[in-house]
Length: 147
Image (cartoon, rainbow, N blue to C red; front, side, top):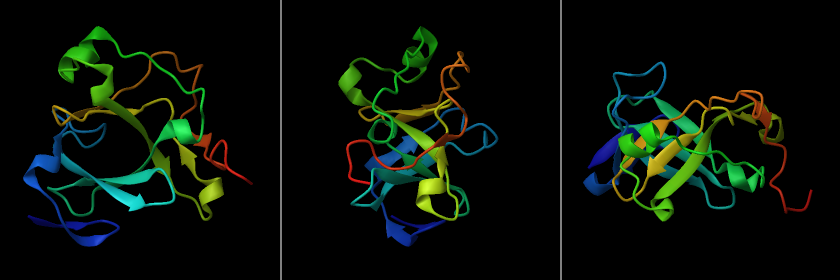
């Protein structure tokens, strides 16, 4: 199946790669079907692209590459909604706000996007302890990389 994307133009996707966000994303509750597309093989970034609305796509970062001590716990409700059975089935991303230069860009550590890769279910979780992580954490450079 071919879809048009916000940043990559036309891409071919497989039906089994479609992720379902039952509640959509905050502000986009009417859009539930997305696909995760790689953006750059050198950076831990991906595009969360709606397959229903071409103009709806979010750049995601694998947060642990930029902030190694990033951690959070999922509540029982989120585990149930995402049908999580094993920790290995889960991957977390953060939504990136792109700036003029990548180093000035920020990622939202307060509301990670959690995906059950086995069940193809996703949800953006708003963490309850807002004092721990900011809404706009500077990406800077990847931890462990040469500056």
